[in-house]
View 1 (cartoon, helix red, strand yellow):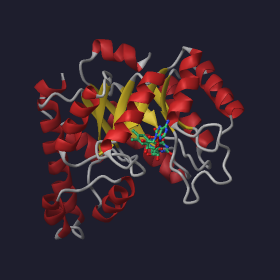
View 2 (view 1 turned 45 degrees about the vertical axis):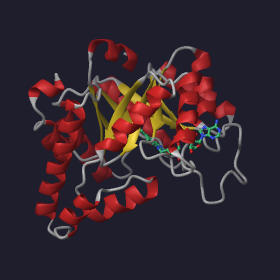
View 3 (view 1 turned 90 degrees about the vertical axis):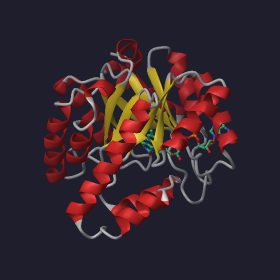
Length: 289
Ligand code: FAD
């Protein structure tokens, strides 16, 4: 089923994101974690795609498994950086032939040397989105950045290009993680003023590892409010206390997002289930139905 059809039935969607596991034990672990998460009846599940290239076939295998063996609507992430048009067309055709109709279309991170030495048939996600839309058979998601993409000078120029992604054919937007809900709501308000009418689903990353989250947030430009840093810094080496504080913070964040009208939540699970299960099952029933 296309995610746009799910939108017609569900005012709010709840979705989970996984990445393809590399080894035997991480595959087993992922199986167990997916088993826990599907009990929450997600609206859809997405699988990331490594722009770098080593796990791309694993992404396709996992997406197929989720959609056809587990029976949950799946969305394949797909990146175009350094890809040829021939490869992209063949991959998109292959996904369609397996009835994978939902695609999160991205550029992928630029390496340090930028586009130098890379195939430049696709320079931006919008080029990929336009190609997929021309086939007229996919439901397309695109990435949005409440605190702007790190390469953008300011939020206005980033939103101009986000509007272009929607004009080229994106049906909905999922955001980068953020930790201050005002960033999300200001972003949605501004996006509406730029003429973006699609759903903008907030991306949630539960904090369960302080060092790791600091590194991620620095890389993607998502700021962690000082009050959270202060609260978590002193307990960062006490894994039980950190877990519980991180989950409490995420519950507070999700409740506030839903109360203020967010159209659902997309969880970056990092292939774990415990935090997402604990957060999701603590959300008031009235907010998730
Ligand atoms: P773009 O939309 O191309 O934007 C990149 C930059 O170029 C921005 O600064 C934008 O403002 C600017 N820009 C856009 N269009 C134009 C234009 N036409 N002309 C000039 N400037 C333009 N990465 C992965 O490798 N695999 C994944 O599975 C993955 N999943 C993700 C899922 C989500 C929800 C998010 C938020 C990110 C994900 N990423 C993933 C990371 C993403 O690939 C990076 O953030 C990447 O640096 C930008 O991708 P994009 O699709 O937003 O690029």
